[in-house]
Amino acid sequence: MTTTPPRPAAPAPFGARLRRAMDAYGPLCVGIDPHPSLLAEWGLGDDVAGLTAFARASVDALAGHVASVKPQSAFFERFGSRGLAVLEGAVAELRDAGTLVIMDAKRGDIGSTMTAYAETYLSPGAPLFSDALTVSPYLGYGSLAPAVELARQSGSGLFVLALTSNPEGAEVQHALRPDGRSVAATVLAHLARDNEGAAPMGSFGAVVGATLGDLSSYDLRIGGPLLAPGIGAQGATAADLPKVFGPAASLVVPNVSRGVLRHGPGVAALRGAAERFADEIRAAVG
Image (tube, rainbow, N blue to C red; front, side):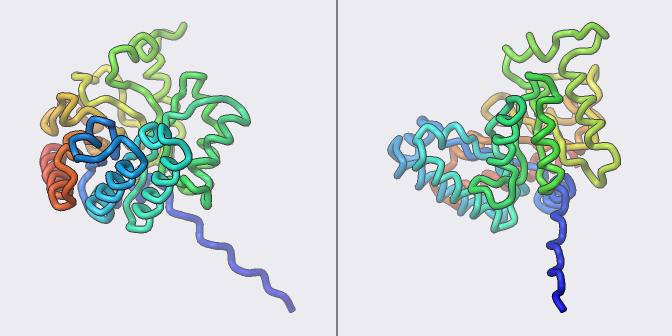
């Protein structure tokens, strides 16, 4: 008599895993952005060897010590296949250590192409499989459906560009639809719908800049996380978070990149900087 092997347990949804990590380590997300200028500051060459050393120190400093990290894919892609190999290794090591990886690739397309992007980052077993992916909804929120579906299946998450801090974003995000609602508000409403019923936190988040000031005209309570770049080098501080995000402050995942990375290349100094930011943010948002 043959028996059917048991199916592997479904992974916990990203939102639930992120909430646990935030409660354990604080909500800080550290960006891993190997800018050419940072490589130079660290005394490294702007080449694959320098990139490898940068990634190695970042992983050693952060893995198992922060809730999440956000590698910026472009700074690895610019070195071609060898740069992507460095990124693949870093992602695997971080995830093996239990640190959530939010891949900052801002993918957005339609149909089979969007499906391929989703499979690249959200399909278990893919070389760049990550816990979450940043995506662009500006071909219409519905174009993200393949990524939404695969994220649900794999226990991954998405962070959808909604209210970004770059000045150029306003011409699209603040534009009004025929019903009088802004494009950004529409994106937030779609996310709230996709997070309905999720507890303790949904897996579909928004990217909302921490430098935008008063956002009380927007309902940011989408039931999912709010990835908030802008703390540190871009001018926002941890103390700004309650003022910017109001009653949604408990959902905020503040992203700090240069504010931490400029303390490298020493592992202890990097880790210390991350811990200081985490403490400041935890004190500000409770």
